[in-house]
Length: 388
Image (cartoon, rainbow, N blue to C red; front, side, top):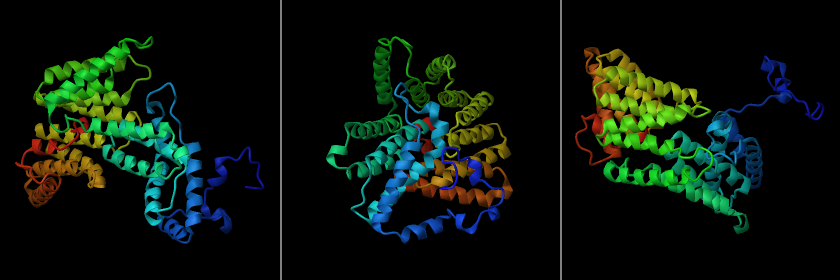
């Protein structure tokens, strides 16, 4: 790099058609085994220095939140480009701290990591969020007191509170109390909204959609439809169009329609939910996407379309099986539903039995006191309502 113009280095310099065109001295491998071996040969001081350098590089590359916006929604595409690198730093910090108790973090590292919980909340990675909070707390505690800025401490406290909120009463199936809290938060938000000059009187889409889902599971589908319709009307008046929130609304409509035995309409809404989710640039590995595929499998089975049901459910399973340590209940539910579908095809009886047994094993692992393992509702009760 010392012999080329530093102000104008094109990416094409690094993307030759054939690796054989590169001199041997310019070749390198990023294979995980090579990386692990290289790190193993480094001293603790070298590992600390290189970690700090990686943290500085990542901080200055990763997009920063616009001060005028409450979330990173409009930058999620750009965030996703670098997200895995930031997560890798988080995992590496935990590993290095375990190997070397004197290992420390930079304040810049903590600043870049504090954006990850916002992404986790926006994408509903709640179990990942718990892990992020734990590691970020560990990292923050290694900073000198003068570097532990109020903003960093405040972000951690806020994210911990939001994590607990998202795991709230509706997920514990205490819907009556959950609705009372939703009503309170709805009132507070409206009071604040009415004091604003811009978007005066606008309601919180998060509260409306999550409250709508809570109403579905509390047995009030008509009230849920009315609230979800209000949310969707507000979304459609927004610019830019919030595809991720619209996906949540359509998912709720699908649940309402399935409750009302309107399987054809339910299928349309679940398909629209998934399409909007992906259009918003969200990840296919997200539990919400798995939830859409699962529900599409359910309504296909409700309509007697066994082959389609199995296809949808297997797609959902490709997501849940990647993270069974986190999505234990989700994976168990998918296995249970596939077993129900396969039972209708005599040639798949043995596979159906194996899946049913594995579903019940995971159910006992997740909830030892669970009863009635042959009911879809038993598994539903263990899953977050946003993708239940």
